[in-house]
Length: 217
Length: 217
DNA sequence: AGCTTCATTGGGCAAATTTCCCGATCTGCA
DNA sequence: TGCAGATCGGGAAATTTGCCCAATGAAGCT
Image 1: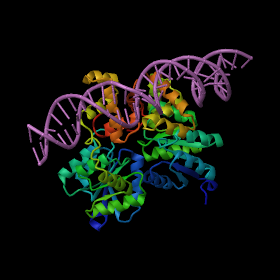
Image 2: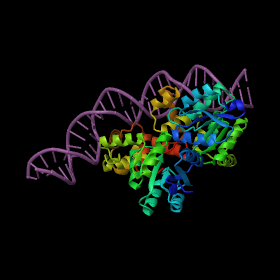
Image 3: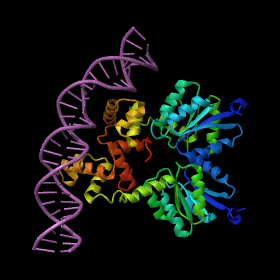
Image 4: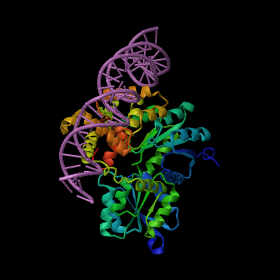
């Protein structure tokens, strides 16, 4: 019997790790009014499963191989603009959260949250509300206080270009040659970029670039 | 009542994501003879929990922030060389599998495996056998047939660990603190790693680490 | 036009880091 | 027993960074 028809909440789980998926399937089904009606391990299957079951809530890990989870969100919303999708992610970068909501998600909970937070968030989005876990809210709140948009918006064109090349693995000499600048200028940009983005390490810079879609690894 | 005293298997779960941990806690406890006696969310707590409970099997995700899971494995084995530790990882890179077994793990299962594989592996290591999931076995088999010249093979364990933390974005000071080394030593390793892998830039190092499954981006 | 702003380009210089070199331990192993 | 290799760190010169500065040019506003 469908949970939807009994006043409960029917759920589609999307995560590429079977054990993990199976894991929180049990956590969720421990709630009497929850019913996991389907599972999917990638974006394409998520869309198919949604069409087949039209669940009340989709709980989705967006970091999956192949097509992006964001793509899956957009596809599902394109089909049913009333779909409730709760993103369940490892990370809580402001850019990722915004991208998820921008794609049509109704909620965002990190895997670092307590199970109770996930359960509560599912109930919220099922009611049509928006929800996010505490840590996500904190990150977004910080973001809104400090006028920092997408981390890239605070960078000029040249800075972005240099960040891109740095992330690509180019040395400062190569970048200077590529852009016809002095090594010193590239060095100054490197410093400025780190200052503006609040990163300490080059590795953090690479991660930032990848997150912002500047570099693909 | 302890599962150990009733002929069952007592388990310590180590994973830094509460929901995920809670998730497979339920998967495991669904087995009548399994009993999760403790949980931990980092390497240090894992060691403490092991001392306190002396479980039959430790199921551990080795990709955790701060001190490495490999370190935790070594610590636990140093205390009780009979400890059975089953690594439960996102990745299945040959180098990482070897490092885990080298550190004293009894088994290696990826999160991409079916729950049944995890359960079976736990039973195996509890009996004192070694175990690994099918995908891990396939990777290792390939490796033994065609010795993959993974860039990691030329690196020692310490070097790999330091590379991992560098790629994660940690500063040398943080790494030194995490591993209880002098900053100078970390510096020397950083230099050595770049020399051995032929990389010039930290960004290239990050890419290398990601390619080898050492870093999750 | 006159003014302010800001992106872009680089110099300077003290402080920090990197680069190589070296030796000391501590292993495992033949 | 003795060798090879991994691990750990010191030393010193070379290089880079961190942070200051100034000059230019292009908008943009009034």
